[in-house]
Length: 217
Figure 1 (cartoon, rainbow, N blue to C red):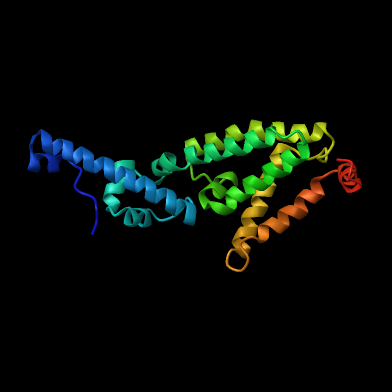
Figure 2 (cartoon, helix red, strand yellow):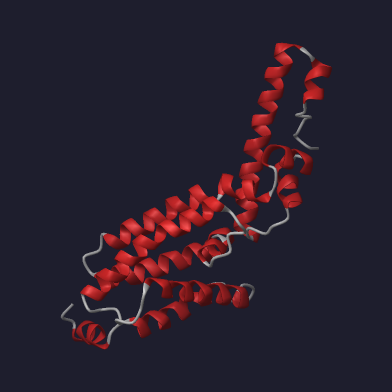
């Protein structure tokens, strides 16, 4: 049984009266919250391109109600993904920039962002550039560029990250993780972690690796 009720002006006319109007608004608000909760779940599980009818079904409303409340996929994405992703990115960035050991900050930054990709397909697609035209999501990802620049600069300053690595190169890391996740999702969903370990080892300068091996850092 669907939870939604008609939200159009005709429904008000049929029911009539202030109480009916208040009831309609309450129904509309509940439908909107159900849709947002369902969208967050479905996008996390199936990605930003997940069918909207699956979102409506999980929310217990009609596809018509979904389009009436949000107008389509882009506004629904904007309503649930950008704020959640921004909060996680801020948390990761704050942690990375707070590390005295810049390599620990850089490596942890990369690992944590890749973990976001693995745990939430909508985050993974956004970090890999697949925003499906969502302006707010594009802005959130663009805002992360300054944090990435500072994390990379800190590691360069301490001489632990190879000099030719740039913040833009993080895109290759995210693309690698996306490919690894798709290839191993059924057999070994954590296989990407092994790949990231090898990748980070290749990015660390020889001098920094030797210092750690000698036990002086």
